[in-house]
Length: 266
Picture (cartoon, rainbow, N blue to C red):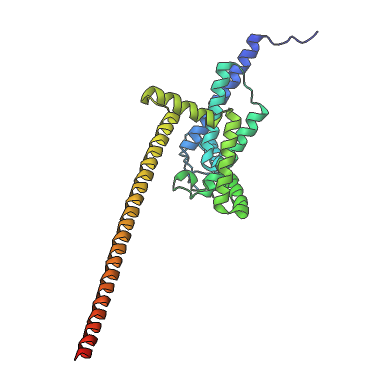
């Protein structure tokens, strides 16, 4: 007797059940992290306390400690992803993560973990037993890149990897996203888009530059005219001095001749 294929109704029930399991897991992880206490018993915490403050009990304490030790503050993203995939699967009646989506999310998480580990860890209770804000995973990535590229270079590389992974995972174009958002919404609210405003600003700058160039030309023409006038005045003064010198020389010559004639007449 051949096995009966599951009907659409049965497949829907299985998918909905799995989606609810994902949502419940995400909620439990979120509660474990939100109520994490660094003094609760855990793998690397030796304590005689019998009371566990974590709302999910010892399981939540151990789970939160492992997640925070491994991924740091990104552990909260795990609960978020579980809840999002669960809700999406429940609504769409399909739970599927493609290879590209998985690789993209992994690249984003690794880049973000490394980036957080490059920064000083904040003084919060979730990082009391964690080596870095990005956990052991982020610390290993950050140290490896810093050894090769130093801190600034490592930050640039991790930032680019995160942005590229986000673009490829979500299939978005930064140019189209920012261009459409700024231009269309700006036209509706401000009357002009960003590009139109940039064009108007360019025109104002060009007009200001042209006016400044014209003013410089006018000042240059004024200075040239002043220099020419001063040169002409100096030329006239020199000519007057030469004429006066010639007249003085002629007068001295006439006095000398007169004196000689007087002496001869005597």
